[in-house]
Length: 50
Image (tube, rainbow, N blue to C red; front, side, top):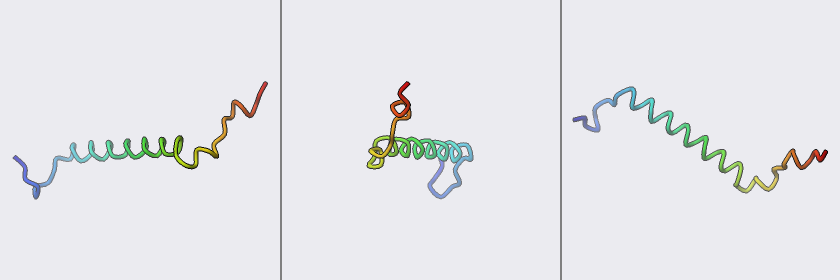
């Protein structure tokens, strides 16, 4: 059993890093899509009515 003072397995560190990166990117995408700045976004399909 590992204690808190022992070094973690490198695979666990990589997995946690990738998970944190994915969560950060997902959060940023949701914030961009639905956050306060979303009112400034325009729909390019509505801009070009054929």
